[in-house]
Length: 119
Image (cartoon, rainbow, N blue to C red; front, top):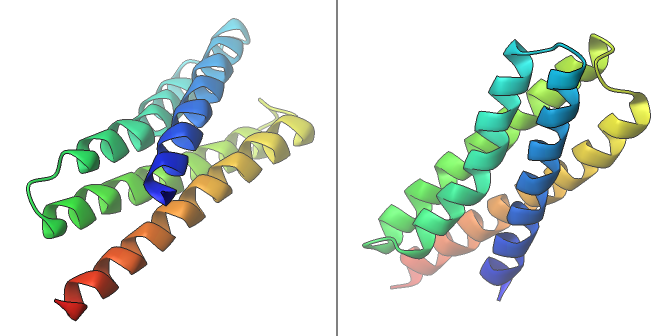
């Protein structure tokens, strides 16, 4: 159930990141924009890969990669805000979505690890 929610929310987040990338490049910011595009879209891609994992351990590993990418995306958002490429409003909106996705991923990983220990 929560895996379907994370799939939807991470895809929605990726769309917002792609749109942010378009805005940033129109503001002549090319380096950080590429970094956030890569990490922000990688979150959902790794979640999709996890859905097709070969084992529970593989699933947890792929979700762990997604977690790292989500956290990296939050870093780029903070840096873009601190360097005035995005407004506080833009930052807060995107950051809130990113934090929500990150929390869901962490919860899925914790639950999956507990389920492995039970078997």
